[in-house]
Length: 553
Image 1 (cartoon, rainbow, N blue to C red):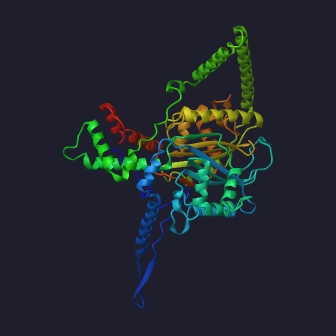
Image 2: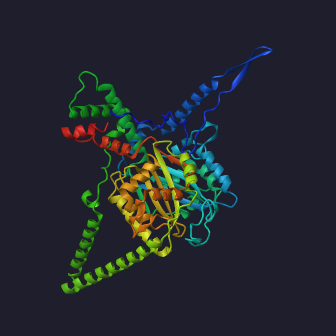
Image 3: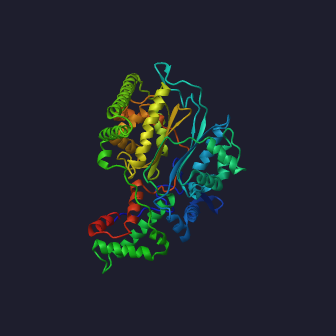
């Protein structure tokens, strides 16, 4: 049997209570109190009270977090009606920071990330993230003005590799959320309006929070639509993910308690029936009687997904055949064949010419990695590996000629977005099962690409998985960005040079001042496994199916 996952109120022993990613907390030194037995004699005795006070503070923080997470049975049941059917979205608000406000904003975000007076990060007084019931992940980060020492223009052989007006310092705020955008914005300003006001008052044009309609309008004007979006937990809300984790833990506790008792069955079908009876008796699990929507299905069989060139060829042949069939209804067959043949030849010639042009550019593109990448990496790793998950934020210039590269990048990301919805919706992107949410966004009038990711495990393993399993997809995207390792054509080589690729990725990564996860104790496989456990409660299962289901515990 697997061990129970810690709940939000059970903080890992190796971390301080409420410590956000990016903020380590030192244990307070125990003061010494002098006690005098005689005027000329002094003894120093440690006073243990702060230790007890610290433990009480930790308990109080746990209680506050638990209170925020508590839901009534009616709330749980109402929420469960949308399980497996939840629309998910991504928000990115990106605004210039007012002159002279960069450092004050950094200080405020540092207070959010590491609240004073022992406040818990998840319910800190500025942005009480845990009270935002529809937010999976959120982040605030500052991107320095470019060009500057912190964000220089990429240069090769003394020549700048990009051109255009300077880009001012900007604040980026992003969320991965459930439901419609309007409802998400309403919740943001209802729950965290005063805190958002404090943060965005450092930015140009902020109208204040006294009129929520104006504040929402500001967010909408400065919102950048996501070019490609992926989630490893499709159609599942924050509430569903938390409830299903609790369901799994309660069933596990039941099995641990009952399985060793005399008379407990050994047959998988009977064990499953005992579990079903237990769930039906528990008032706190009444919501689990509501059957969720089905697990997402692939658009085409996995055989074809793993053979994309063959699939693309078959799709092209299908389109050509369909076009010929449609034209032959209104034109003579010879004329229809000539039209289809002519269009196919023209498209093929254009694609060939474009690929030849791209190959010439790729052969001359310089590989640019700053000398300071090791020092930069050392700063980044200070905020990593604090919980089950990690994050990555990257902002990088797109190569020139901009019109060609931007169009090509947009086409690649359009395919990535399609694949994320229909070809990689089983909890793994190109075979990588560790990504909760990821997005690619083209910003700054098409001059830069933003990449945000929330993933399980270490950064090294995350990038290593991409190199091993999806290097062609990585190369197809980032070969359009300045400084990427040498590429042949669009997707060959590039990321296969693992060390250069990892150095390049670190070089493009920028610090995330504030990062929040709604379920920091769960991995993508945990979440998907919990959903499959719940789905296994409904209907009839054969002995083999019941045995496979029980292995999920």
